[in-house]
Image (cartoon, rainbow, N blue to C red):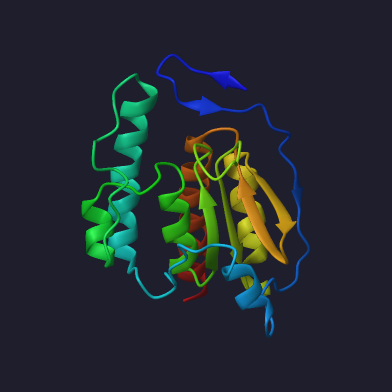
Length: 186
C-alpha cells in the first residue's frame, strides 16, 4: 500500500482484463442473492440522463484534481440524496467511483457494488456490475484505454484501478466510445 502526499490511498495492483464476449446478466434468484450482500443497494438503472452524467463527471474531475493536488474533499461529499439531482448536488458519493457507476447505469449496466478503496475492506477502487453481451467489447476497449482491470466477479464484471482517477478515466472513455459508435451507426 502506498500513500501519496495528501493521504489518499492507492495500491499497487496487477491490472488484468479477463472477460468473455458474453452476457453477464443474472438469472432468477441470483439477483436477490447478490443484492442481499449489499444492504445499501439502490437500483440506479433509470436514474440518470446523459446531461446529468456529464455534469457528474465534470464535478468528479474537479474533486479528484483538488484531492490529488493536496486539497481537501468537500465536507458533504458523502451525503447522497434520494434523487439523481440530490446525488449531483452532493458532489460525488465516492470520488472516483461515482462517475463509473453513473456511466455504467446510463448505458444499461446494472451496478451492484462500488468502493473507492476507503471502506468495505476493499483495497482498491472498484465497481461491480452486470452487463449485456453487446456492450462487453466497449467495456474492454475503455478498460484498455484507461489502463484499468476488468474481470469476471460474482457472475458479473468488476472494473478496478490502482487509484480513483483510473475509474474516472474508464467512465470517460466508455461514454465517449459508446456515443462515438452510436453516432457512426446513425
